[in-house]
Length: 171
Image (cartoon, rainbow, N blue to C red; front, side, top):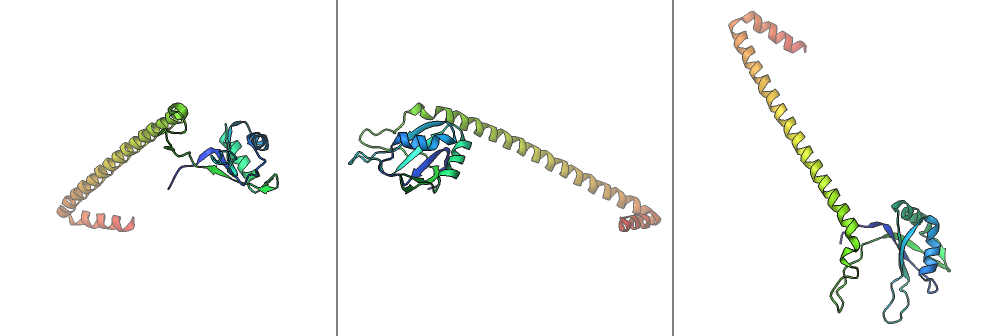
């Protein structure tokens, strides 16, 4: 189950019963501007399930909050703060996701642009590698052609052959 983490959304575990979304917001707002705070409710008791999610506008703020709040105490309980995993689609009776389809439009476009950029860079890299291989093959062919010319030249003149061999040994 390798799911990517959401680097601006934090999972906050170990919440006391008294903690609500306002208190959670107040505890994390010193680290940066908060986009959203959620404390999922237990359907049977209508109380939160001892955890919540805090989404920051900036990744750096989320990182600072995680560094400072993991292991901190809130209402007498020690908090566990980690990056959150993306919300899974829930079927339920209605059979649709918990969020509207347009909710991740911005991140979808961002992912598309990143993927296109990656493909462009890979194509450039492939072209550069092919050009380098072609150049290397041409160089090897030229060296072999040069060796053949040397062999034919040195076969005719034994003195030139001795000079060529001495030059190769000295270099």
